[in-house]
Image 1 (cartoon, one colour):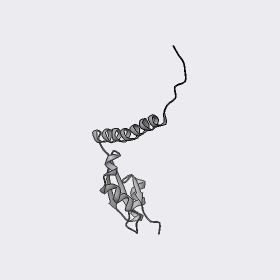
Image 2: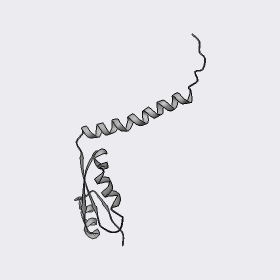
Image 3: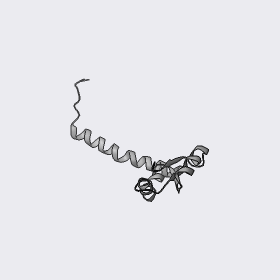
Image 4: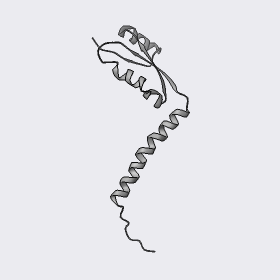
Length: 97
């Protein structure tokens, strides 16, 4: 048996990495689609572009792809802190004015 070093061509390595990067997210999304979505309540207050990423994520179903059933709740900051501490909402985002 010959024990010479085996050289891996860069193009072969690149092909394998590309296949992994394409298949891995697809497998993750398929797994997320088959399991129950975890319910998450997110409070936000309207003010400038602060809630913009949340709304974009909700509209494009990014939360569902990650396995969450996100409910976005427009709530004043003073009430949001109380709701967060009491456990009525899990996350909150607002402007600190």
